[in-house]
Length: 129
Image (cartoon, rainbow, N blue to C red):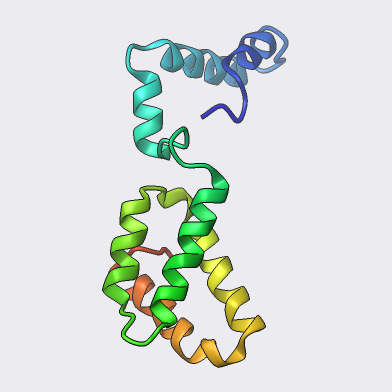
């Protein structure tokens, strides 16, 4: 996922002292070289090429503001998070929601049940987020 470039694995593969570590790096290099590997990574991690972090954060703020407006419902937030297609970024939704509750205490009566609902019933959020 480009946290470490594949070239880094090539550099460190020969300098690892333990056989177990060398075999893990070798397996990772082989996996990265398989046809379609990039597409599989994008499928698992999302395609950030089309959405910048700033755009995702703005979308999340918009979802929360829409939810807090009269008539806002959990289903729209759930659909919006699904449409964002960045499940690995859902922690940012939780962070933004909690910060909003702290900065605007009057919103916590609606935000905390939303987070609970998205965690328990719809499974949009995990307990680790």
